[in-house]
Image (cartoon, rainbow, N blue to C red):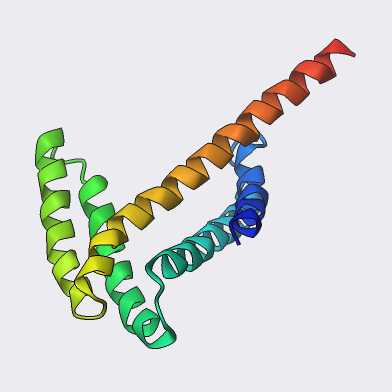
Length: 144
């Protein structure tokens, strides 16, 4: 499963590592790639938390609401106090951990944020690998 996940992540991230500047015609492709990554994240977290279909049906709307609120805090340009933002995110995570326990057991609710970070790390490593491969390829191209 992890090898399939890495393969799909690689394919999705390829378009982001191709070094092109923003192109409105490619916006749809990038949006589609983002949806693919989000679907992979959903599969990854579902597997990590061992969610059954009933739990997943209840869990994902709560998680998506959490994600939207986290993005709102992170993108708030008004507050420049980094510690204040981190505290707000921590408070939000505590609130949503309680909400998750209404759907899944406490031990799995405690693992939600770790699974989220594990997926981000996986994507980050794959992206860095792609960037490194791209630089090596460009270096070989210049050498010919």
